[in-house]
Image (cartoon, rainbow, N blue to C red):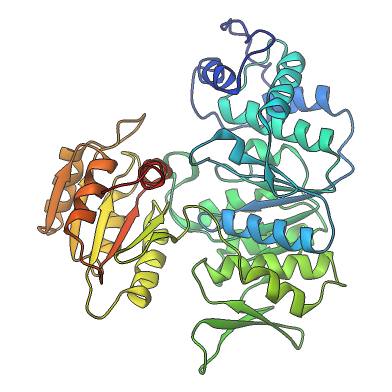
Length: 433
């Protein structure tokens, strides 16, 4: 095992520093944005936590749908009377969104205190922005005394910083192609990485109806009690009510909303909580998830025209989004797509998945690290036969133009990345003509 990095970095923020100052410093302390591996994180974790925390550790991995599953588990456990801590990433508008204590975003004071604790324990060990923040979330959960830690994997699973803690329970939401440079270019290899969150003998749920053999093999080798959708539990449609489905497991039916969130992810969370809290009735589970919402996941912020935001950024997510738009669109209206993306994503795959449902495109550039500029985005679209488009320098400019042209029966879908949705939400919150 190689020793932790000891590169010299800028001095840490002084006492009284703000969250913004800490985050600016975190962006500068490690030479790379992403460095998968648990060695460095484990060194600092052991300094912070000589023993595994007493809380139940619930780890969620997957290509898409992780945030929905975390939100489902969090809400249902709180309904059952449990105290929860939820860690998700990335955030939309404020870093504090990443760390929720009993359903509320962490305060600045608690977050800064956690950052200070991690920095004190870190010594000369170099941590990435995500690794540092992950350990800070653990500290915040321990300080708050929450009973259940619900942890969303940032990238992959096996080598992600979240996986430094052994899961007591796990969920794998979906497995598809994304982050090829880090995880591989096929479902078998990616499934191996996702299944790295499994531990011997635990209970786990897989929301992917066709999991790669790499997932099933790891689960079998570790004697994991794995529940797979379509095999161990079913999601059954209701012919008389398209707005609802039934989660069917062991002769029990739990009514779940068919949307707007991915029902497979909601169902996986419900299956897990049914095991964790057997006294929580099917009726209470059904009632609790009716109002479940996740910012940036098919989130409707305006009506007439409808304005919907979605963080979907890979072909798998785009196919799901296209299916939702088919069911949502008005017969008399058009679908207007406002799209901006990061340059390392499968933009061509996303465009082709969405092209059948988008009537007119408003392409925008993203002026962020790894952001794709408008000219490059337009070139990719034209190469795939998309000719009904306009180009803009920014998401706000594109959204303003789309709203100016949209009729009351139209639907505007803003999607492509967390940055895209964050910029659109900020504009809509401050008003747009």
